[in-house]
Image 1 (spheres, helix red, strand yellow):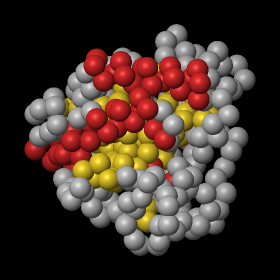
Image 2 (cartoon, protein in one colour):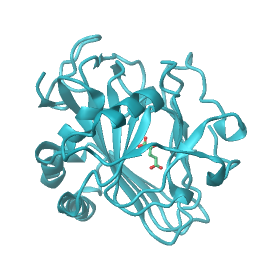
Image 3 (cartoon, protein in one colour):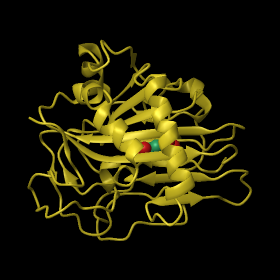
Length: 292
Ligand SMILES: O=C(O)CCC(=O)C(=O)O
């Protein structure tokens, strides 16, 4: 796990950015860049109409649902002015998140990047780095390390809810999804570890100390979205700015994804209903959004 900032954003390359061809289609150049780089940025992926539904969903979650929800984590480290909050699977209890997932163009737009026939919803993930949560850096990791899934067609679609300058933006290792290797899961909270016997997996490399590492980043505006492959390594700094840095990530799975009866803890911890090793993931928890 790497927490030191050894590379400044000026030394990094740029995530390829595209304006979607239409509301529901990213377009061939975006899809090709996603395949090659394992990450792209889609400009203006969500308009204010849907962003305001997301803000209302967050408001409902924070005021009525977050407390007591064991999927909701709030970490405030000593010396920080603000906390890092992250929550998942909110859609199960929150009709406004459900509206975004089931009724917006998100499934069409992001699904078009995957080039899949069937699209399942995997989970939602809200990340709020409150002003001044300076030490809440996100370690280098692959999302795949945490998933009780097999397959390659798994994407994280991370919708910026604030303007995000490069100083607090996500960083990626371009093309790191292509080796196919899955590394060990590391906890976002440095005081915690994941339980379980997946220790044969290697720990993530220390990319910040590797001047050859092809790190790319991008400044985002509210409504832009990053789409990345579940095997693409990424990290992020803490929020040293005096303003919120929030995102809603929607995670989808395509045709080649099956259930992995992973030993130990997975994240999300939810394992669906009656899933069997190597079998389809469709169930109430991972519903089909677009049939094959
Ligand atoms: O926003 C961040 O700092 C981290 C996001 C991330 O790593 C993820 O969604 O997997």
